[in-house]
Amino acid sequence: MNLSHLTTAILPLDLRSCLISRDGRLLFEHYRHSRIPDELAKVNSCTKSILSALLCIAMDRGMLPEPHTTISEFFPKLRSDPDSRKRDITIEHLMTMTPGFKWTEFGGIQSFPRMTRSDDWVDFVLSQPMAEAPGRRMEYSSGASQLLSAILARACGMPIARFAELELFGPLGIESYEWETDPQGLYTGGYGLRLSPAHLLEFGRLYLNRARLGEGQLVSEERAIRSVQPAVPASPPNVGYYGWHWWTDTFAEQAAGDNASTPLSSSFDYFYARGYGGQYVYVIPDLRIVVVLTDDKRKKDRKPVNAFLDLIAPALHPSAG
Image (cartoon, rainbow, N blue to C red; front, side, top):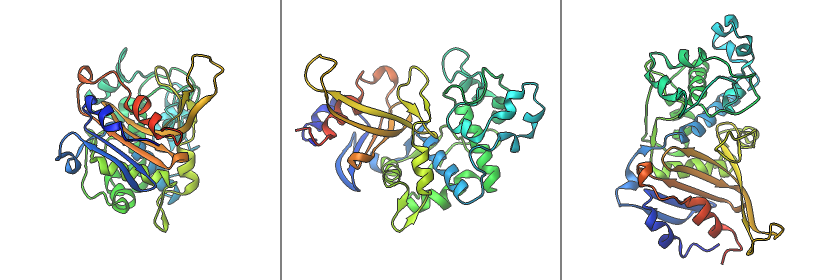
């Protein structure tokens, strides 16, 4: 592992923050300015992975039924929907973004902006037509996450932010946060959290340790492992796979030379939370490493460089020198 040139390499990207930790020890720390460590900022869709942890905790506590449970248990109106395929949608279909709704997050029909302009987000999602049977294909959807937020709130009998304070944020030492709500007062499941880079790092460290914290287990090890396993191929233009509101992929760097048969010089599997605009929490189990990246620049102002894949990952492997 060689991080000696990383400061020089990432400086032109003007990232808001970059943190690299190994086995709980901070190896690299960079902030655009000195106020950032104490500031809360939007983590956007990294919220989805935190929601995943809360759902798993609720299942562990027996508050939420198992993933194969159909969501009509929580939304009885689906039982009388003209499209019978809606009755087959399960909690796990929502967690893997495979419920089958006709949905385009951005571009095309732009389902996400339409949902946020509606009077009732949950009703908006449930009323969308089906494109195919549940489980066939991933289609990225913050609408699926909002249904999960509603399901969790009903299952645990309290706002999910309060549940997070008791079961996740409190144990992790996260004392300050902000979280948006929909018109019904439900906390947003697909985005809306504001956290600090250190909060994201603690969350990543939790999953590096398979949700074990000290002598306790915040999420059962079985569910923590299952939630970050590849479940379905990621929908284009995304790459890799999708788990339970986590992304998964493999970093593979070719040895010198253009020959396709040249063996890999370094490779490792990783999973990650990802938020619009450059918010990432990467967890690399084999290397015992967590990487947090945050940014706040507009798309047109961001450099066409993937900070993790192009600069950080090649420097992390033990063979890097």
